[in-house]
Length: 401
Image (cartoon, rainbow, N blue to C red; front, side):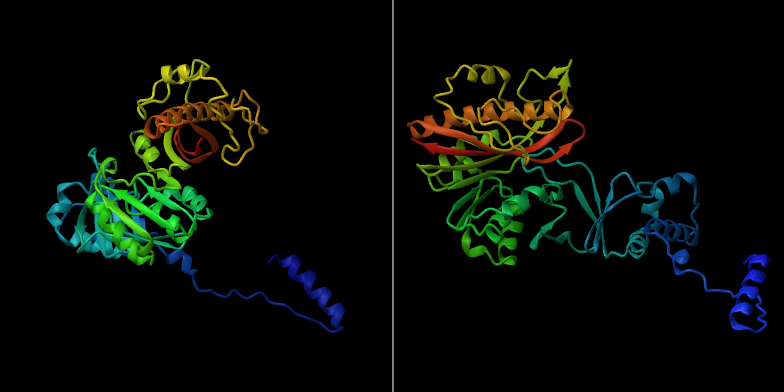
């Protein structure tokens, strides 16, 4: 406190109390803030490993420090490190002491390393357990318990918006087919929240099937689900579904004929997942249906444009929650100017949706040998992969004549 301020305060208090007041400043040593002593996990890891290297006679260098992980994933008591970290020979030489110190610093009990997703038919994660007994973890997502082995299965947190949307459906009188069930990403929301009458879950990855069956028991819904093990082209039931979920990206097109055959003779709803490339080219949209995500080409879409509107009716009622036109042309009606990037992107989604609805109509009429009407109900934007790849879900209502 400034001396002049102290003097002024003395004068005011003397005047108020009617007696002389003398004030004195006294310095008090306060205890140091606890926050100053708290280290981040990254700082703790650096200090712990540095001390370990020094204690075992190693040399701490800039190269060694740069080999420390800058990020990691934590699944309960299991931490997954990037495979670009802790790669130097010094860590191998130090043995299990390294992983014990990593566990202490990051407050975990198990350590694994993750590389890229394997390019096999199951799209398994390339995760190696380095320390601990097994790779089984559990996630709770919108009150649903998902358990799986991180070394054998993946969990996509980015699909939470679609899971929340499914949770709002009323499927209490419906039979649902999930063509790509995995560990139950969408199967479980249909059962737990949408209260599906019954779900037929198709899956061919043995590791995912093991986790799926475990999760059905874990969430007490096993009585309302039948798991069909194997290629869905071979095992998916026909003519029983009110609703079919095709939750495979970058494209679920290979499953469209299976989904059409699974619908009841009177029809039902398809939820088709797809990655759309919305990148403009030379001021206009790309002149093909999609990039590396679908075999449906632009010529199929162009030829579909010549089909009379009397035979195909598409009613686009919403794009990500925004109202659109009902004339089948797919013009987005929102507050953004048409020349905006968002408007171009929406137009791309709409064009893909229109082309898909025409192809699905053709499949339905070929499989069921009678006329069908296919209506576009909704296009849901799930997430984006920077900068122009959009994961969307197309809802199609399919009705037979």
